[in-house]
Length: 333
Image (cartoon, rainbow, N blue to C red; front, side, top):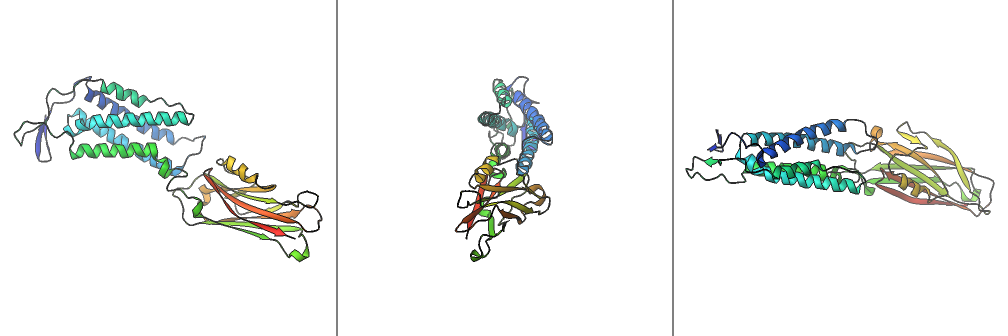
């Protein structure tokens, strides 16, 4: 068999011998191509645990492209192409390293993942030589072997490293809390409390408003954030000064009395910082990173006389990754 490649006529056998390293590598790459497509299909099914939409898209694209790459590599090995043969061993090593990392990461996260790719790689490396003859550069007349790493070999290896790296470490860029996600510095929060005239005594009702906006937005927002308002203040007998009165609705995308599935510990931590509190769920699926606001009316628990004070706090909890507090406001009468 012969073909023209880079201006040279290359000669090679029809394909690797059965049971050889190259033959087993080609079979391994075919299996990985099928597994990649199956994984993409399974990822489209509903998941009980929330996942970043951006990370899911990035992972699926990497899986799809790696499936194409593995299929092309397997086919080229079957045709005896030198660049594919040269790339087969580094690709097997990359695949084995990725499998080992995924298994360890899953174990540390409490998930048992069988590293079947590593088993396939070990099986492939136990194969013998796959070609009785070697590709030759006929145009040079030297009969020597083609350089083991041509540009095409290096391109395939580099692409595989990038794609497998995306699937292994993509959460650092595309996941919640990653480089493309918003952080505390991007949130602009404002807390307003209508304390009234201090000389007029403790007001019967107290209006509290919290507004927020973002200096930048993350791509493909999904899931639910949580906004928490808390207040602390007692009368002279140590009883709560104000209690929850009423709230103002701000559309179905901001749901009062609820919170997101993520960040339960952070929400509880923020709520514990005040004697009283109320929370809202902010649906990022529907409103994204648009500016928003919530309003709460506190009701005086009983008639009191000064001096007394009330401190109001506000916090925004983002998908269990972080929470940002606004400077508290204290009313004194």
